[in-house]
Length: 195
Image (cartoon, rainbow, N blue to C red; front, side, top):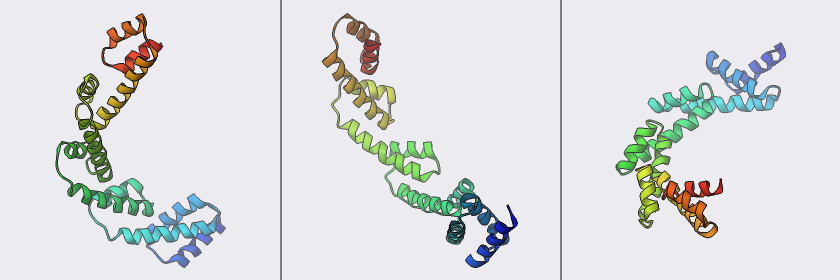
């Protein structure tokens, strides 16, 4: 870094506020690396990072540690992560415990945003699966994907679409051979017919 840039960063650091030297250096370096010669953006970045660092100090615990570990000296992202994970943790804690919530917690651990997202999507898919007609397709998909309701729902939709396509577009001995080989796996029957 040339001397002019170092001098300018020191002036900007003083102008924005006087943080700890180590943290000022990491913030200054990150902003300088990101915005190079756009000194207005370097200044803006430094101010926002310092504000975020100050706000982040209001949090403590494992969520903050995880977010800081993930985002390092990018305090804006660490703060964003900490806030979102904290809200998601509260939402997960307030949800009913069932096999879906237990599976999602087991799969995603302390990534509370993903736990919350998983619970929402799995419950919506479970509702869709429970409201679908019980036939060879729903039985096939339920056996294949068990309690992964998103995949059961996805499988049912794709298998039904493939079955409709087969009934609409194909007949003859090739169809019969493929149906004998793949049974109720209509996606594979359709693939077999087409190839």
